[in-house]
Amino acid sequence: ASFPLVAVRVENLSADDIESGLMEGTIDLGITFTPENPIQFNVEPIGEEQFVLVVSNSHRLASRKRIRILDLADEPLCLMTTDFCTRRLINAAFAEAGVNLAVAVEMTSIESCRNVTLAGGPPTIIPQLAVMSVKVPCIRIEQPVIKRTLCLLSSKTQTKLRCREEFATLV
Image 1 (cartoon, one colour):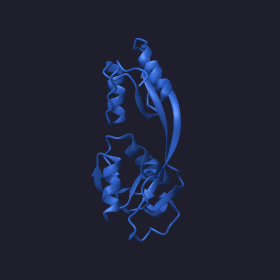
Image 2 (cartoon, rainbow, N blue to C red; image 1 turned 30 degrees about the vertical axis):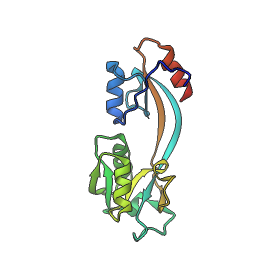
Image 3 (cartoon, one colour; image 1 turned 90 degrees about the vertical axis):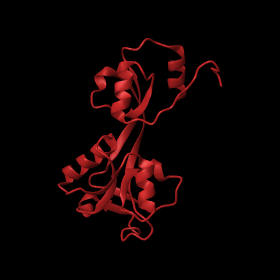
C-alpha cells in the first residue's frame, strides 16, 4: 500500500531455485533457509523453526508427546523430495543418529505431506509452523532436534533498489 507502483510477485520455490534466481538477478529477495554457501549473499536471520513428527489421529504414535529419531528406525514416512533442503536436513538427522530412513511417499510441498498424513497415510516430518493452524497430533523430535534458520536473502551483486530495501525492512 505504501508503494502502489511496485508490483510484488511471490513464488514458492526450492532453496536452490531461490539462490539461483538471486544470483541470476531474476529474484530480488528470497525468504529461505541458511544457504550452504552464504558468502555470495546478504543473509539476515528472521527466526528459527523446529520440525515435528505429524501423525494421523489413528496412528499408533498419536498419543506421544516426544520421540527420538532412534524410535523412527524403519518407520515408513511421507517426506519432501531430496530437491528440498527440508529433506536434506531430515536425511542428515537420521544419518547422525545412525538410523535407517524409510521413505514410503515423496511429495514436493510441505502441505501435500501434511495432507497425505492427515488422510491416514504415513507420518511426516515437517516444520512446526506448517501445522500451527491445524489440530493434529504433533510429536516433538529429540536426539537430534531437527531445526532450521529462516533467512532473508539478497544477492551481494545486485544494484541497490529502494523498493527492495523497504520490502526487506517490512519483512
